Image 1: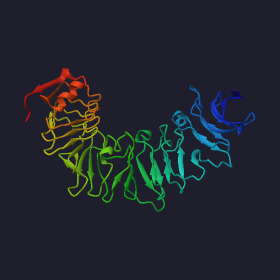
Image 2: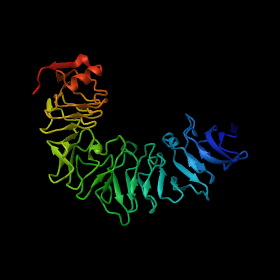
Image 3: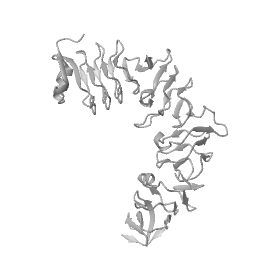
Image 4: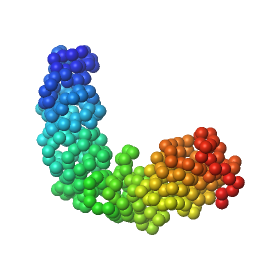
Length: 366
């Protein structure tokens, strides 16, 4: 139903949700009461297509904002929140939870290139930079523990700058033994992970390190998250005393004999996996630009999306491979020939997967 300039949806006998603003003002002021209903929720469709909203003012009664609203606020310069809200607070146009512990949304059209958040800020929510911001530096305190934004949401960020008692890590955000965030626009083609770091934060499906980082130096202390963090171009150099990872000619392996990540920008004509390799890990050759891949004899398994979106045209799979994930060849459109031994699991799998046209069955491979 429509009340004044707002399309609303009744939540209960006393509360409504704002579905969409129907007016033309770029400064949207949402009233605390719409008709007889108290405004409780803001839905993702608040700003209709074509309206370049510059500011949004919330009443104290609002207790929930749909996360899907934030990516649409590309032109927003500021949020305002009425006094008395138990859910939200705005400072200098930036939206926080009521305690200013969590940064909920930073308006992307703010003109400042640097950001100094409240000292009590401890968390940056995944919605905080849902629409690309212009920030180049982010000042942080020792209380900041969680940074959930993705690199693609902060394309201009060059450095994290320590404030107060926070420690400086050359522009990189680190908390305790965890590497939280690497600025997308930080200068330098190589990066040395500080000794003592044990984990790299997960960033969903996005690589942690930007394309500018060509070589990554890994200390003996790192135990977790490296395989998820690598960009398709990253060559790794792992300390020989690292108990979780090892590098073989710049390729990342685990000490459990799993090939974890092959640098996608390497253009080897032929690559043969290291002797003793037991498994090709999930997404290990995703985006790879090599022409021919030979999986060494003794390997037993090929993981999920192992060759997804790669440019591999020729593949050799030994008869020792007894396990192939159903999605191993997902979007591996460049494959022209796969050499397998007659009667092997690989032959049976590829026939069942409808890839008979690229099968090259031979009596023996090794």
